[in-house]
Amino acid sequence: MGKLFLLFAILPIIEIALLINVGEIIGGWNTVGIVIVTAFVGAYLVRKEGLSTISTAQQKMQSGAMPGQEMAEGFLLVIAGVLLVTPGFVTDGIGFLLSMPLTRPLIAKSLLKQLTVKVVNGQQQAHFYHQQQWTNQPQREQESDIIEGEFESKDDRNTGNRIDKPD
Image (cartoon, rainbow, N blue to C red; front, side, top):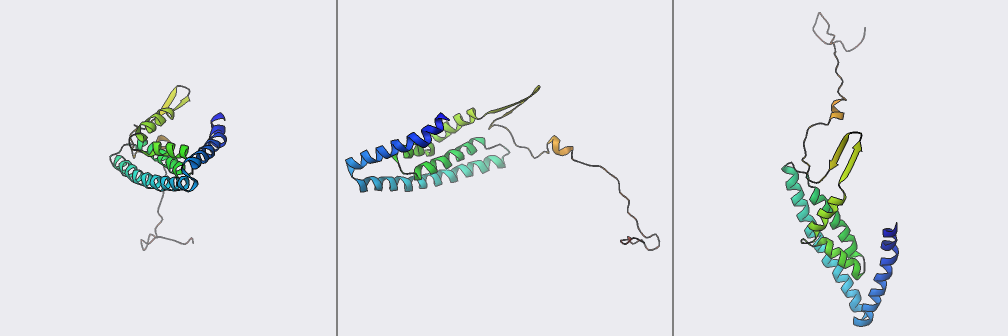
């Protein structure tokens, strides 16, 4: 709850104060121009890096590997895109940090370590992590849905044709 308070209450106040201070130093229109330029540059960077990340994820999926790192990087790119089009210098800084090809993989790797899920059910533990391999094999739950049975085809004994209508 404290982090959300910081995000939605304190950060906009810091952004407004910083925009006012920069506007007093370099002028209001120059500040607006910088905010607009960072939005366009950020959108271009996020698009370019997003396409690169999608390409890498597709290559991993074709080789049978789970693209966990790329999924985390894609998530960071979405957040970066939102932050970069939000007016402000702090959000732009965080957005550029999340979208740069040098820092994004490190942040994504850290995020994946934080999101490692441990499911405990009695003696069983399942760890979901980005290095799992994909298989096209059905899961055990799906295999238990198979119903075996027998059927009988009733043909007209004189002609060999199937009887579609009851007598």
